[in-house]
Length: 82
Image (cartoon, rainbow, N blue to C red; front, side, top):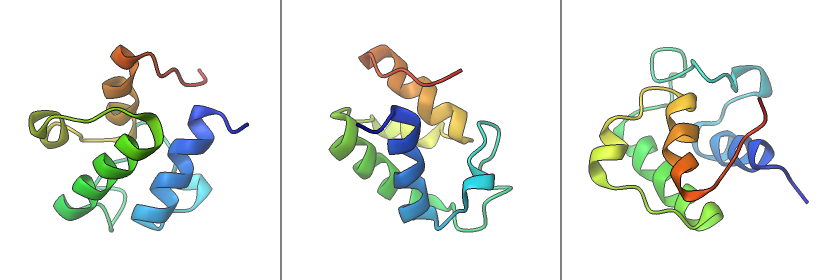
């Protein structure tokens, strides 16, 4: 069974077309060229499908890095490796 980090990495690889070395909590649209507003919507949809958590539009607007995605999922009980 894949860890939550592996699941999120898979989502971001698919949506943002990133490599493993770009999967860093502080990476966001400034570091990842393909991360635009449409990608944010696609990330939110994929996160809902994979983790069962629907992000509010306000949460989507506040996503500035990969770490923010993880933080958004924490209240729903989704944990990530340290």
